[in-house]
Length: 200
Image 1 (tube, rainbow, N blue to C red):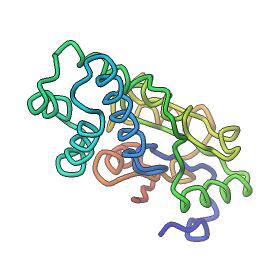
Image 2 (image 1 turned 45 degrees about the vertical axis):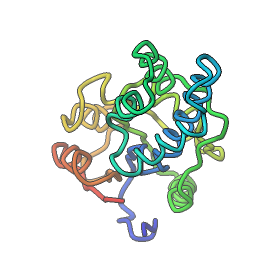
Image 3 (image 1 turned 180 degrees about the vertical axis):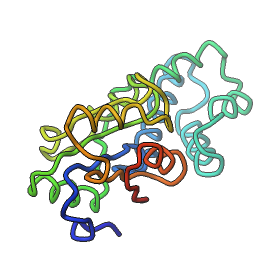
């Protein structure tokens, strides 16, 4: 549990990753699978969308997002030509439902905003896809207080270039900033810029 009161009041800025930090990434991916399955059923009539959706959801829960198309292709005989449609939906899907922030993170962001501290969203992955997620997020007005950066536009994590630029461009010392993310790359990312790290 992360509470704003637990942070050093001398912190002037908070940096967040997006996926599985501010919201559950599966909420995006499962909608992509839903759209793809319905598209495929409409074009080819088989497999039934419900069967493909259930398979992809189960595959995601057991093996993660990697290799889902390959697994579905093997089981359902999906034509290779549809791989690009699958990948395009990941990047550009118009989701039927808004993505919702974790309640805990919504509360934290609102408290940071009220306290007039800076908020940076620094996210890894395909910038088009990450921007699409951001556009489908229900921010509750917080979007007006976010500054967004895509690490892959400069250098992938855990190289600290984006963080160093943020510090420089906003006249911040590393000691005045905290990065909130998931263990692994995010932790090393913060360490490489000498920024405090908090895991969620």
